[in-house]
Amino acid sequence: MTDRKNPRLLAVAAALIFVSTMAVLLARQFTSAPSREVPAFRVFGPADAPVQIDEYTDFACPACRHAAGKVEEMLRVFDGNLRVSFKHYPLLNIHPWSLHAAAFADCAGEQGKFKEYAALLFEGQEKWGRARDLPPEFEAYAKQLKLDWPAMKACSEDQKTLRRLQLEISEGDLRGVSATPTFFINGKRAVGSAQLLDQAMKFDNILRKAAKK
Amino acid sequence: MMDRETGRKLGGLLARVTVGAVFVYSGVIKLMAPPEEFAFAIESYQLVGPQLGMLTAQALPWVELYAGVLLLAGVFTRWMSLAALAMLFGFEVILGQAMARGLDIASCGCFGAASGTPPQEFLQNLGLMLLAWVAFKFGGAYSADAHFSQAKPPEAAGAK
Image 1 (cartoon, rainbow over the protein chains, first blue to last red):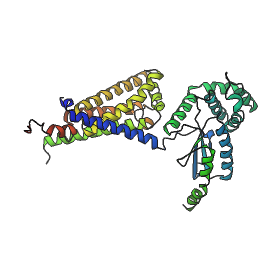
Image 2 (cartoon, each protein chain N blue to C red; image 1 turned 120 degrees about the vertical axis):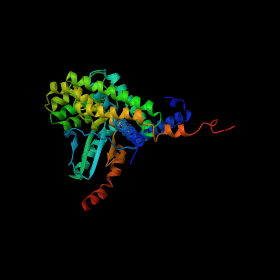
Image 3 (cartoon, each protein chain N blue to C red; image 1 turned 90 degrees about the vertical axis):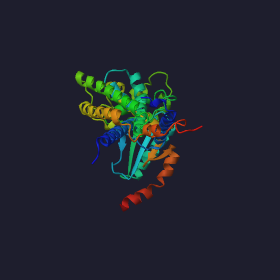
Image 4 (cartoon, rainbow over the protein chains, first blue to last red; image 1 turned 180 degrees about the horizontal axis):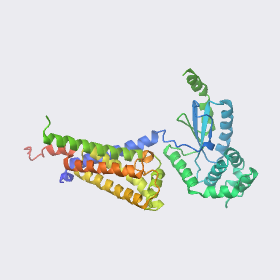
């Protein structure tokens, strides 16, 4: 075992380690995968839709509220041809209650009202977004929608819910998401509703191509 | 007809490349996924806390990747084979204790999302340990080690 004395081997080892490190870091930057499955209550549109959108959103972000309306409109216009997977990407450093909001929204989803609860969160984001203590709005919205609040609270503290959120945030990090809303439209990135609408102009081409198949 | 020495060399090469490829695959598949995923798998063994689990999840895939790459190229073959053997032995101990304690582990985390159950991985690891041992004994042929040891040092080549 005297081979470690060989400086040329050391140089080769260092070069291999350097190259493999760079290859992995580059692949991480450019990969559109991995994309984890989201719960069924956060997916809108048929599985075989030609246009697939992953939407990374923060409930406390005003641009996300604006984009949510656009996405809703697009789902109506491209009915049956569009599938949107809603993914949480709370910006924890600037929105202290976003993670809680995401957890509560998922727990409302478990009770069949994700969309409705999400709409109320967006609508009232200015009220709860910068609260010092746990905003009472989370409970008020649940009661407004006649949801089981104690069950929602327990669900929001459940490790399973929190892990799912952490994994989604981490997935967003790996896909290079740093701002919200970020969309991946058939793998192509768009940040903000202006870029989303810009991409939507090309949907007709995608749909025409899909129809020819 | 292949003589015994050639058979050993080819067997060693095959073992080295197989173990190296498995380590590269195992490292890359984890590095391309969120580290939390592997950290959750580590936590399910109930040996370390979340912080150490996360640290391990971030570091171990790189170690696997580097060991695999060096084994594939045949750089420091004997040391890398030993390192692979030691890692596989460590994984085996961890899997074994989980099975002995009857821990409910759906996925061992060995190959990210593509992992099997602990008993499957336990058996697979045994096979890999055998291959790592073969690589340790006979894996030096057709390697970077062999290439550089064949190159004569300047004084031996008669350089002035």
